[in-house]
Image (tube, rainbow, N blue to C red):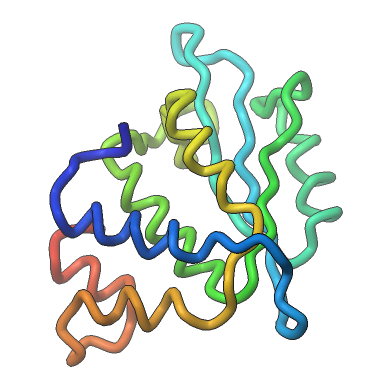
Length: 156
């Protein structure tokens, strides 16, 4: 269903799934993860963009102006507490084999399936301040930045 099923990717997926909770935390800042669907292009195919923002309203206004974003399908918007950039890095890693730079704008799009979107839609609210340390525990502690660790492991 999601990328290759090797043990590291399974562990990254488990860390993300552990963060799903039923109630909002009482303190902490939050961000919004937005997954938007394209209009058909590149031989009629549909693609998705994955991003994050602290200013949801401004982000939604911006993507409405993009002619390659579908106005027929509302974006999947997920509220996440802390670690949004790390969350996005791991999600992009999980879908690395579905990532492509496509014209007309040359930006990154993802060829996601309905199963992929269903899995992502579970992340409505996430716990604060634990994803980074949980991911770091998988890698050599000598490298401080998550992206560098993923690159060192050949995963980015």
